[in-house]
Image 1 (cartoon, rainbow over the protein chains, first blue to last red):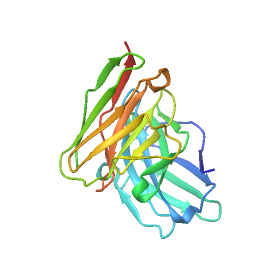
Image 2 (cartoon, rainbow over the protein chains, first blue to last red; image 1 turned 180 degrees about the vertical axis):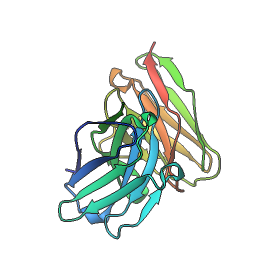
Image 3 (spheres, each protein chain N blue to C red; image 1 turned 90 degrees about the vertical axis):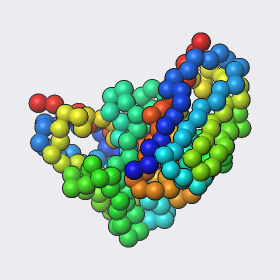
Image 4 (cartoon, each protein chain N blue to C red; image 1 turned 135 degrees about the horizontal axis):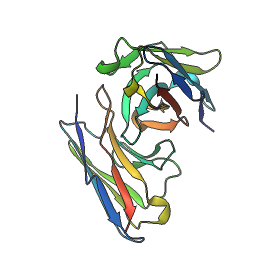
Length: 118
Length: 107
């Protein structure tokens, strides 16, 4: 079955960077895109960015452009999202989700809590 | 960016009730509309894609309709496990955008 397993919770200081990983299994990794979505405490869902593991193409929400770097490793079926210049309002749960084209985001990781605090 | 407006933002309903949530896009998105259910502390779960198609394993009490700018999610008979927050999402244009969510609570 399709599974996306994310790395564990992180605590970072303002100005630092954080890298969240998302290991995929149960499907052909290069056949589906990966989106990153975050959710601040008590708030709604916010789409951040998308990457194609097939060719590395990316799309970013403008507010994250220049601060987010996404990579994939097809040898380990892992997608990574690095967010830099962290601020306190980056405190959120970060999710990866499989993008199945017309079927939308059909599978999600369990989420990774990133806390930014001095 | 396309704005997705959900209403209501919250509702109280009883077990067995029929519940309808609406989602309006600020411009036409065809049928590239998905609905998600999220329970506290859990990842979102995909319910519906392409406005009206049920994801595999999702019970038929959930149904979706609409195209263009106006969409609805209907739960035919609310059960205790359906109390959650529901989000719509357009995935026709980047940046992908979500509605603000509808919290369905027990009356």
